[in-house]
Amino acid sequence: MKIIVTGSSGQVGSYLVEHFSKEHGVIGLDNRPCPFPAAAEFSKKIDIAKTRDLGTYFKDADWIIHTAAQVSVERSLKDPIFDAKNNVIGTVNVLWNAFMSEARNFLYVSSAAVYGNPVKVPLPEEHPTNPMSPYGASKLCGEKYALAFAAAYGLSATIIRPFNIYSSRADPESPYSGVITKFVKWAKEGKPLLIEGDGKQTRDFVHMTDVVRLVDLVIKKSKVSVGRTFNCGTGERSTILELADAIRILSGGEAQVKHVDPRVGDIKHSCADITNAGEILGYSPSVPLGKGLKEMMA
Image 1: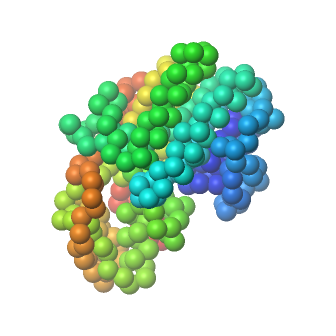
Image 2: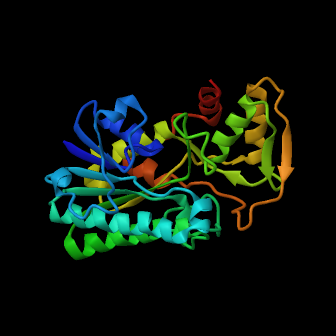
Image 3: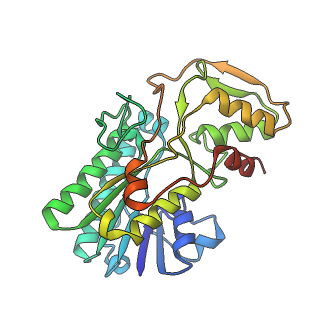
């Protein structure tokens, strides 16, 4: 198969390029050089939000996996126009080129941020979508455009909504890194682990290995996956306090914990209902949080 992965220099995209290049023809696209050698050899430097004609890469693609995005909630709050240009205009450009190039299937990597404040937990795919940030709004907009292209042009579109992704490829130097990446960095540097609020808020932390596994199942089982939306998580909730304690223990018990002001608009609880992914695709998470944290600390 011919598979295109946008955002190939990022955490999600680089793992997908590395995974699918073992058996398929893969082209990765990103507006910055790929820092990961196993994915870099398959990647091309190109800005998918600004390059109108992507047909050279997309022609006759079996799958286009769209992961390219501005992924920080904090940055979207500070610069919502930048967020929209990347996540909305970039997505529309990729969709239009996919249709014009006669690509067969489009997989949009969305986000659990589209749900907003949960009405119930775990969150099923049919849960109301009321994003609380420009980032969540732009990802939901991308979903709607993918579905609109499916209805208007017949483009095959599938959506996955990852929850809190983590892996050793997340950039610890980025101010927008996830809480696991931040905690691990601080623990290794001997700095206190800063918990926003009381730390009782819960999250569903999913290792990148399981995100790749779900994408792989979507492609392998396209007869039942196409046209659907799937949550990508573990179905397990962990409090930020539990996370901090686990990392503190893995670091030798020396890391201190310090509470700071809660983040404005922060969601209290979040957890994926992965029933559909399990029943339709046979998906089940394979990396428990404890195992993933050991890898991160190593």
